[in-house]
Each structure stands twice: as structure tokens, then as C-alpha cells.
Length: 132
Image (cartoon, rainbow, N blue to C red; front, side):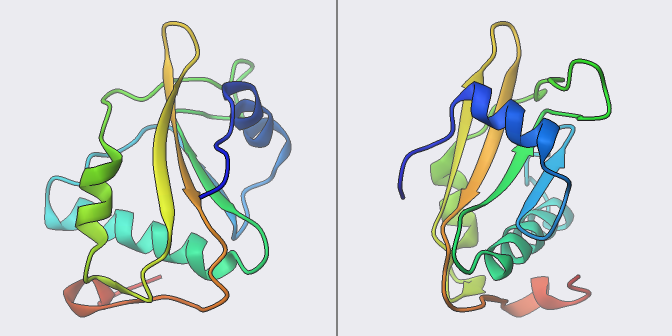
């Protein structure tokens, strides 16, 4: 994985980039602590990975570009290693990604940064049902 975004770059990306296939934003990070939330995370990661042919894809959490101050902050922090473990055996080929959090003072935003794959990953097993 190459360099990560700075807080300023993540906020700028949110303000100036419309939601599209290789970029998404969410107002909060939903901890994948049940099958439904795990499935949502896996589907979001796969969608971004499938769209990242030649450049990185991103999901920025804790932001809403429709507000004057787009930084809302995430309600709970999480660990990249747990997400890496969650994805094992559920997506093939497994996308290379990094989840990291950035402090903006009193608020924290999170970034899911997905490396370009060159191959389109697919969701395996029970999470493949109803995939978007």
C-alpha cells in the first residue's frame, strides 16, 4: 500500500469528488459485528475494488459533503487488522486495502483505501447473495 491520505486530503476528496464507483462517503463507520453489517462492509469493499483499475479507490467515513462543515466524525473507532481478518476467504481475489483513522481535532474520520487490483474480485459464499 502506498501512502495514506492526510486529513486535509480526505476532506478535500469528500468536498470535491462526487460519489462514484471508485469513491464513496458515509456519515459513520458501522462496526461489522453481525452478519448483516459484515455483508455490507464486504459488498462495499468489493464494489470499490472492482472499480479501481488504475487508481486507488476510497470510502471516507464520518463525513457529509452536503453540510457546511463536512466533518461529522465517526461514533466508534475500529482496527484495520480485524477488517483484514473479516475479509479472509470471503472475496477472491482478495483486494489489498487499508482502513485507517484520522483525527481532525475533536472528531475522527476514517478512510478505507483500496489498491487497484487489475482483476475484478468476487464475493464468495453466503455474502454473495443479494450483492449489489
